[in-house]
Image 1 (spheres, rainbow, N blue to C red):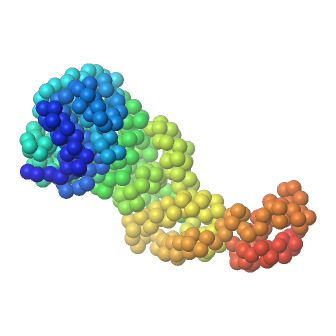
Image 2: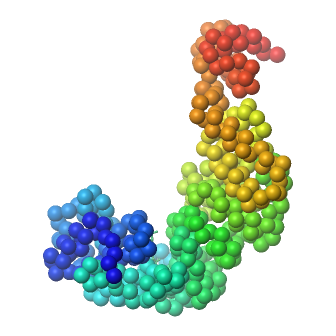
Image 3: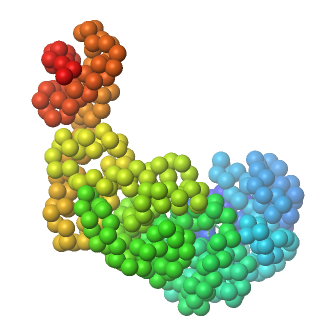
Length: 424
Ligand code: ATP
Ligand code: MG
């Protein structure tokens, strides 16, 4: 068994070896290498204490990431490698950190504290792969299974319940029966978990490719996380979408969530489609979504109440109201939903192809959609003799005319047309 290691990880493992320590690439990076995927980041573990590790890497830049828990980050060729001392952990009584951490010299002990079999493998080029829990077998069979008893492992740290769903969604793996049973029994323990930890996993979970399976098999978990909209996960619901009332079944919502582009705010907005804006805001605040994400979700939920523009001027007005980013999200949502509903609502979605063409053309040509795109300024208008709030009204009047194609966005045309403005 030979697996790919980055040059930086090789350097770290060799540096440890020079001091007599056997270090391993561990966790997600070992898993991803075995799947022939490129690891997002590299974690290394070794029996050296954090102090010893700092000594071994004294010629490198070292950051104390969590020295109490035995983690330091070493920069090799400017790339960060997290190095953790082999350790065992106590329970997570505060649901944030283990009660105690004790260092050990035994790699097997370290692997046993890890959450899933596929995450509990370690690789060293000389020692080969250490797989204490059948991780390779589960990788082959595409299964998420806890290391040890699922009920015990989920009770120790309930965030693992969400992590099981996250890995299932992102890797496209099924959750093994006993682990799945335990997820469906113990999910209320997620109520004790800090919002930040939930949000971090939820982000990754909702962007997974295998989301439909997770949403439909583990619906109760989502009802628990989002009680405000749990009704729409259980029964068909009427939602106002694109200016029309639509009756959507839970599985249609789940399909649409999985069909929309894998951007968290888009998928969350689709999942919350039956929520009022204020309920969606409540969820975002409770789970501490960052402000940018919350704004993007709420804007989109508001935008999807608008009918799909039938001509270019109405597309420009939609962009004027919501901005390019939200209208792009709006079109992606409509496209995903139309795929799911197939022939249903043909009258609404029939306009979609044309709306997409208009949107791309407006964007590409930089056509005017707001006052600052006009080729005149407030000062130009003042020079014509308009004063105070009238200036703004004249500019809006010009923008309307440009959007409708009655005049061109050229300075002289705009000034001539402005002279025709009358306040009544
Ligand atoms: P990704 O590629 O998405 O980063 P990952 O497997 O590296 O996936 P991380 O959250 O970065 O996931 O965690 C690194 C490793 O630490 C995991 O592979 C697992 O072995 C272990 N781990 C992380 N969180 C927990 C936890 N809550 N309980 C037990 N082990 C955990
Ligand atoms: Mg990782």
